[in-house]
Image (cartoon, rainbow, N blue to C red; front, side, top):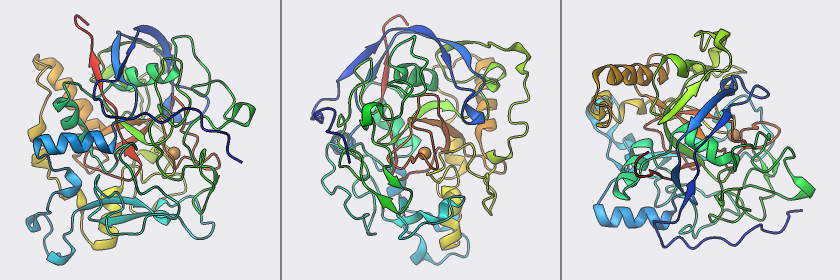
Length: 404
Ligand SMILES: [Cu+2]
């Protein structure tokens, strides 16, 4: 069934395999799929460098060995944050994908996500069962179970930063003129060829594998895009530095850490971002449309809640608000007004009732299945709380060019 592998996997023994992305102006977003992708609007991005591939387990291990860094998912939980909880339940970990045995209703992500005690980048499924047929040797696979903070720490160590959403989408399109639905054209499988590591089969119970890979694949296992970047689509979702917004027009009013300039193509779009879009809130009971603005195959932004529902813990308290507050405004935003706008965007990105900001994830993952989630496209985006780590989120790094 699967097409031949598109490319040889990359040996990721260098931290400096970056591609220079020429600057340019493009039409960001899409009006043809999910509401959070619109409206289409013009964005100008300065030239920058982007990692050719997602940061791998091997690379992340080098970072940890050099620095002693402990990821969010590995940090002990403070009993003070979980009044009344049995200390035995206070086990660190992350969210793990658990395929169902039979077809299930696709409106409840709890059917295929579970809290994974001791899950971390070292062992993405913790002590739990790895889905059948998924790879065990992960050195050349994208690192997972990393939070936004973890990704940012790696980037800083490597002398890089996370890309903005605008940069990421520009790069994913593979060329400034590429307005196609998919990164490679308008057909999802041109000539029957599997172009990216997305779910093949029937989600979430039948996984026939993308070019033979179930779960993550070694980076570079599929054809590169027009810029020579691999896995911009599929494999794992990627963190960006941009705060999530319910609609792109919200960008005009609230500053984002973009490094890109925006020109709205529809001034009349106004500022009613989020109106009529209740799915931004992940209620305690998932509504049928609860995943509208998140990757439907992922736990969206409710990972803490899932953990809580199983262990009576609120994992959103794991990494306290105070910790997030200390993160504060980035040092490169010196001006007070800019810092205030940044704080507003940060606050607006959080789920109602939460102070934990959410970023825009890009690219879709090995779990995106056509019958359920068409987010393996450059314009797609998914909100994710900064402290969440799962088996299908990773990242790659960017670097500004001198003078830009
Ligand atoms: Cu998806």
